[in-house]
Image (cartoon, rainbow, N blue to C red; front, top):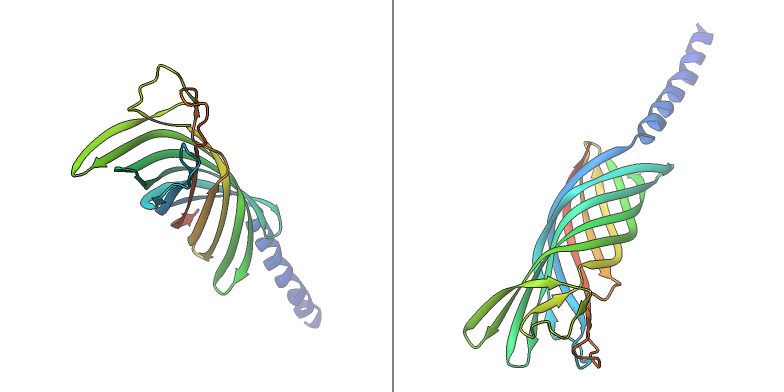
Length: 223
């Protein structure tokens, strides 16, 4: 009897730890969505700081959680995200709305806390602009047009069009909490490191530089 009890005392904890290790070694998938508050920062054609403020948008997508070592994971994902800004110009204002497909490539530290897990993630992202509109307001008159995604503005391109680069590259940082049932919430910050203002061959002295910055709040479920 004493031997049986001893065996049970040894076997039960080992079985529990083995089950945990097996569970933590699985690749898991998540769906998430939430709100964004983004801005375009940088310089105008004359090199002056943009007079801009952020606008609200949203994001939605999926990701995978791939174990690397205990408590550390690689988390690639695919998101649809809307961003933009309101920019005050001399004599008129512009409201810019942008839609991106984004590939975040985060590394995540995930540790037990209470009835769930604390999460801290960071890594690069690559975004590609798929749609955009700019609304210019002069006095009470508004004019809305599509944004043209180009790497360079040619000499014969219309002066009335608004141009941006489609490719965006930057970094992510997020902190969050995942409950034992798979529901999670996280606060995301994002800083663009790539100038999305195209080369302007009509204006060789242009000092324009524009970057995406902002943050978001996500809620999701991990399967």
